Image (tube, rainbow, N blue to C red; front, side):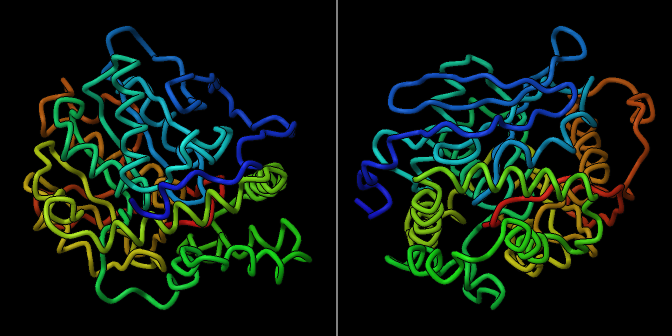
Length: 356
C-alpha cells in the first residue's frame, strides 16, 4: 500500500463553512453521496433529450471549473458533467484518504456505475488524464471516446519547470512550502499558477483572474487543501514508478476507445515531446498540437479543443451531419487520424489549479 492510501489527518474530515462555489451561467451544482466519498458534480442542462453523456476530470489543484469554458461549446453534442475529485473543488476528502491515481480512478468508476450514465465521452487533463487513462483501460465498457489534454503519463526526463510540483510529493515539503509562502497573497499565487499553466498568461481575462483569486481564497480555508495536494502529487509520482500491467503506458496500450490527444507547445508541466509517444501508444489515436498553448488547452484554446472533439465524433460515427451544422466556428485545421493538427482559439476565462 502506498503512502497516498493511508488515512488522512483528522482535520481533513472536517469541512468548514466557506464562501459559495462559483457557478457560471447555465451551470448547476449538485452533491452526490457514494460509499466512502461525496462528490460535487457540475453540469449543464442538455440541449435536447438523448444526447450521449460526457464526463470531465480535472488535474492536480484544479476543479470542475476548469471545464467551464469548454462545456458550453459542446452543448447540443453531449450531455456534460464535470467532477470535483475528492479533496478538490467543493468535494470533501475521501473517507479512506486515498489520493492515488488508482484511488481517483476508482472514484470515477464508482460514480459512473452509480449514475448509470456510461458509456461516456471521457475527458481528462493532466492528473485527470492519467486517471481517465486508467479508467479506460480497466473499464472499456464505460467509455465511448477518450480525450486527453496534456495527460500526466510517465516521463523519464521531467522538465525543470515541473520539478517544484513533483516535490510536493515528498513528506514535509507541503508544510515547508506553506511556511515560506504564508505571506503570499492569493493574487500572487494565482499569477504564479497562471504563468506555469498558460502558454500566454495574457489570455486570462480580468474577470477570470478575479474569479480564480476568489476560488483560491475559498479553498485555502479548507484544512485539507495542502494535504489533498501533497497526497495527490505523491500519487502521480507513485504511478510513474509502477511497472507491469499497472504501468500507465502499458494501460494506454490497452485503451480500445477512439482517443483524442491534445498537447501544448509551451506546456511547462507535461513535455511537448511526449505527444508523439502518446500518439504511437494509444491504438486508435489522433493528435491535436497547439504550439502556443500551455498545460490547460481546454481553458486557453477551448474552441480549438471543441472543434477537434467534433471531428472525433464525426470520425467515429457519433455525430450525424456535417461539422458546419454544429454552429461553432472552427479553431483548428483538420487532419487524418495519427497526424498532427494545429489550431488557435479564443481566450479562456479561468485559471487552473497547480497543474499536474
